Image 1 (cartoon, rainbow, N blue to C red):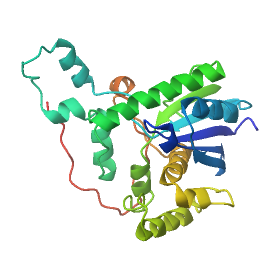
Image 2: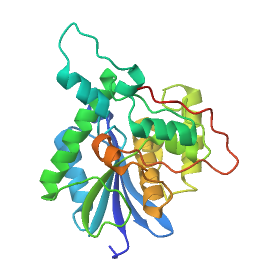
Image 3: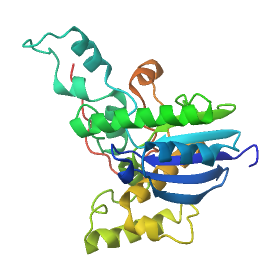
Length: 263
């Protein structure tokens, strides 16, 4: 792999590895090639596969569809809380992160709150998987804050639904098992094929929405590596809570009114 190339692993995280999509691609300036994509078997399989995919790469990036941090106010309030007492903060401040508000303001779509039961469990599972990949590779996997880290591995948080919207595509009604959902996946695959070089055999993308989402994680990683996804203004807060990397809307697209963060 050339010095300019970056190995990319897209992971559509879930608490069940059999519902976790994983995709492998090579990013180079000017294009990204997806070489493999499938669902997992168990966490060891996912970690082993990701580690093998990036083993020969000087630089590699894991793009994960799951929150990689929690709202700072939530942690602070719960640390001092006693049963039966009010928490003393509005729900937006407790359950929405700085990045969730920023994504809503920029592209008009709000990520699911990390405080929700299933999302919180997915976040824990994703962080455990990153730790397992780090153990397999023998390298730390820190969060990346720019596309120019010198060598080794890094990780970013991504948001496939937001990436779809940012690329001018509808972001719903494609994950079910009905004919309309299947047709929508076919349409998304064709659109994705204009952004990435996809494998010739795309059957798994049509049949497994989680695998399609893993490829969308790769697209989000490509936007990050291209420098198309803006970083946080408040870097210190983002380092504590996490940051979703998503590009801006296409020119002329409308953003709904801003959501304000409660205090």
